[in-house]
Length: 88
Image (cartoon, rainbow, N blue to C red; front, side, top):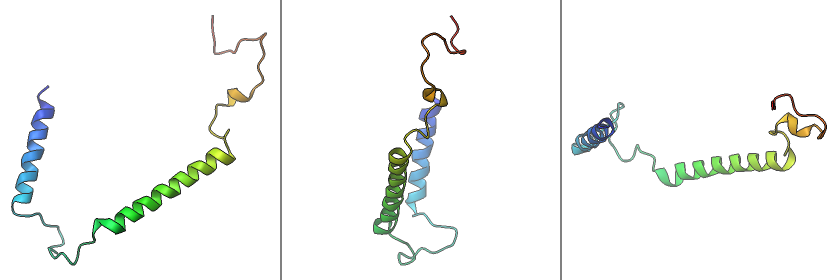
């Protein structure tokens, strides 16, 4: 019960100590010129990736709508026979 609260407290303490003296990286470059800003580079890259995934999903749904369905859905219905996996 107390473990999540303890972990949250430790994470907050860790972040406070990390940003107290400013964080650094293993390469040792602290210059602002060496950093790449998040926007527009990474946000446009993420947006492009999202659009590619959505277009692929739309193509699968539009062109092959039955590709992800269960094969039992394609067998014709027989009212005189119960499927084997249904037991009374």
